[in-house]
Image (cartoon, rainbow, N blue to C red; front, side, top):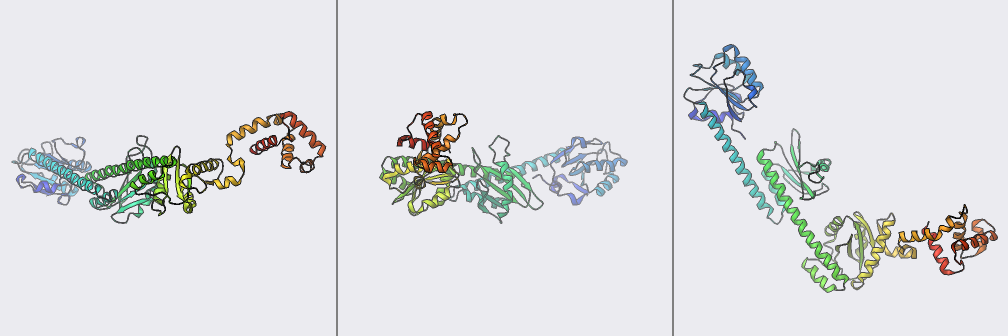
Length: 493
C-alpha cells in the first residue's frame, strides 16, 4: 500500500502546510510528478502528488487547472512558493477548496526532489514490509503443511491469515474441510468449477475471482497434471497483493500435499497389484505378510471375487473410503483393464452395489483363497456378460442358470450363426425355412407338434425340413447337428 498524503505532510523536515482539502489527506500517493505545464494531465496516471511553482499559472486559470487535476484523480497539488509566486494565489486556494483537492504549500527552502525522495522511500519501505509479511505468512503456512493434519492445517492457517474463511473441496466440489466463518455457502461456486476443470494450457483459467459488495472470493484448482480438487477463500475486503501472494503460496502447498498423497497412493496400489499376483500364484501367506505392512487384511473365510470395469481410480478410491475399515477385510488391486476386489461372502453384494456407481461389476461364486483362479475366471465371465446387457451388476451364478449359451463369446457365436444359416437366408424368398427349422427343433423333431405351431400341414413341414437338410448339408436326425443349429438360431435372435 502506498503512503498517504497525511504521512508525507507530517514529515517535519519538509515544513509543508495544507491550505485546502484537509478531508482528503488519507488518499494514497502513488508517485510524485513535477510539471510547469498548464495541463499536465496527459502525462499522469492518477494518484500522483503534482508539484509546481505556478510559473505559467494565472489567477484566471486556477479553476480550470484544478478541474483538470481532479478529473485525472491526482492525490494532491504541491505549490512551491518563493520563485514564481511569493504566496499561493488566492484563486487557486479557493478552487482547490471548492473541489476538495488537497493543496500544500511548499516553502522555498524545501526542494521538490526532497519530496520525491521521501515518497519513493516510503513506497519502498511499504513494499518491503509487504514482502516481509508475505514471507512470514508463507513460513507459517509451510509449518502448517508439515503438521499431521496436512492440507486441513493449511486451510485453517489460511483462513486466519486472511481474516476470512477458506475451504478445501474435492474434485466433485464437495467440501472436505472448511475454516473461518461458515463456508457452507461455497456450494454456490459449483457451476463455476467446470471452467477450472480443463487441463492446464487448454483454455482453463488459473483461478477465479468473484466479488460482491459484501464479499470477495478466490477459487483455485489443485493438481499438477490434472485437477484433483479445489480450494476457495473469501474475505469481506478486496484481496491485497500480500493476500494474493499468501493465497498462491497456499495453493502450491496444497497441490504438493495432494500430489505427494497421490504418489504414495500409487505406490500402495502397485504393492496391492503385486499381492494379487502372489495370491493367484498360490502364495497366500506371503500376500498376507505384505498386506500386514500396509495395515490391511484379507478376508479370512470364503470370499467372492469381483471384477470391475470402469474408472479404476474411482473404484479403488471407493473401496478405500467405504470398506477399508471392514473388520473382515476387503481387498482391491488394479489388474490389466479392470480392478479385482476380494470381499467376504457376506459383504459381496453390498460392495458390488457400491462399486456399480463407477462401472460394471461381475461377481464369481464364493470360493476359498486356494480357488482364487476359479473365482476370478467366474467374475471375468460375469463381467463380460455385463458388457452385453443393461445391468451394472452380473453374477456368475445367474449366468449358470441361463444355460450354456450365456458362457459363449458373443461375437464368435454371432459369426458362427451367420455362417451356418447363410444358405437358408439366401434361399430365394423362402424365409419360412428359418422359422420352420426353429419350430421343428423346439418341438424335439415331433412333426405334428411343430406343424401345429406353424399352422401348416405336417407334409409341408417334412418338405421344408428336407430342403433345409439339403441346403445345409446336415442330417437333422443327428443330435450334434441339432445342437449346433439350435445354438445358431438362438444367438441369431
